[in-house]
Structures are given as C-alpha cells and as structure tokens.
Image (tube, helix red, strand yellow):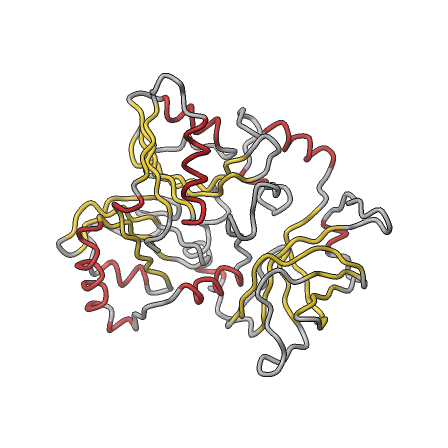
Length: 354
C-alpha cells in the first residue's frame, strides 16, 4: 500500500497538537506511540479527510490517508496552518514504502524477524513502534489494518523496501505467506463494513450518517463541530448501510460494482457507493446510503435506525436493469472465518476503541 498518502506535521512546541485538535473531530492529544482514527471536516460537518494519525513524537504526527486525497488533504491543512509558521507540513509519501502483514499468523511470523515484543499487551492495537527488520532500520510499524483483521502496516524507508520485501517472502514459506492484491483487500474491507474516504465518504457525508459519531469528541472545538451538534439534535436524513445481495447467480447474473440504485418497498431510496464479492460470506456485498424521499417533492425526511432496519421493509438494488433483493445491515455480519470470542479482543479492537 505504498500509494497511501503520508503527511508529516510537526512543531517546536505544542503548536501542532493545538492545530490538529482544531482540524480533527477526534481527540488527537494521546500518548506518543498512539494511532488515532479521525475525521477532518468542513464547516458543514462533511468529510474533507478520513485518516489515521500516528503520534510518533511529542510534537510530531504522521497522517495516513488514501492516495486519491493526497492533494486535497495537503491543501486543506495548508489553508488552515497558523500564520506564524509554527507548524511545519511535509508530504513524505515517497519516503516510505508500505507493506501490510495481515492475518491470524501475522504476530507469530513477524516475531521471528523483529526484535521487539509483539504480544497484544506489549504492542497493542492502534499503536506505532519503530522496528528493525533484517538489515533495515527506522521502520514505523503500526498495529492496524484496513481489512478488519489483525496485522501490521510497515512504513519502510524506501531505500530498504526491496530488502524488507525479500526478507518477508523468504521467511514466510512455513506460514503460507502470499502476496495479496488490491481487489482482495477491497473485498475484505467491504465484508467488514469499512467505509473509505473518497469512495464511501465525501464532503457531503458526516460521521453521524455513517455510524462514526463515536469518534467525534464534542467537548473540544473543531471545524464542523457546530454543524454536527445541530445534526445530532435534528436527526439525519441518510444512513450508511451494508447490503448483502440475495437470490443472485454469480455465473449468469450481472455483478454490482457501485453506483447501483437502492429501492425500499419499491421506492427509490439511495445509491450504492462500492461493492465486492465477499468470499467468507459467499455473497455479493454493497455499501451505500439509504434515504427517505417524499413523493412528488423529492424532499428528504429525517430517518433513524428503526426506519432503516424495519423488518417489514423490503430492500432491492438495481444491477444493470434487474432488481435483486438485498439484506440491509448497519454492522458487519458474522462470518464463519471471524475469530472466536476468546481471541476476539486480540484481533478486532483496532476500529472501535479510538
């Protein structure tokens, strides 16, 4: 995942902390070594970025976001920098090659190569540590993934990239290590109901609409706070959902790809944003937003989870002119490949704890 945007923000004093607290809706003043998932919002509460912030030093953060937002994220931060130049902003994307090591054996595998303890008590989820691997130094290892599985994102100084990759591949035979492509990654994250900025999230969608309001810290001022507090009081008019396609033949029926109309009880109710085949759920899965439009006027009405999850509501999506029934959810469905309860905390604390 070397394509991801990497932006370094730092200051001589605490100015970078104050700046990011104003820019981000989550509380970013966490101990050094913490990684925080946070939204960066406009004055309407919509997303200008959805990112991870790693606090690598007292007055230095690394921001990670998708490549499609590289220019936009950098420009949005630049426009709001303190006029006195106290916060330094640097795009360091090309300085780091990013390799993910993901899966139930990731900890045991990396334990053979790294010199630091990797147990969950020593290297918790949503933390970052500096790692040596092979003959490479200065690797920023973050225990989080964008698939919902346990693992590490390794931010490797680019001059060591080939050496680290070769070391991983040559040492991974006993663990069944395999290269995994972007489309497999896409399938995993859609199965886990994980939204992507620039695909599922945009400047017109808010944390309340996509179920991420638990990451919004309303006891501190930030850009977009007033709009989000108002929306919290008035209610939302659209809701991010996961749609499992039913009665679908993979060999003969058209596949969804995002942008399909959603129908609720025969009425148009929104659009899908992304889709993939879920191999563990053995079903096509879509993500998207559902809304309640008034007949004739097209005005949007306030909705809630009871409306979305009404057991009497019949949902469908239109794929290439054909409607297929779908099962709607607002949380990731259970999969036969999900960890059992006794080790769930060792695999899945990274998305809900920050």
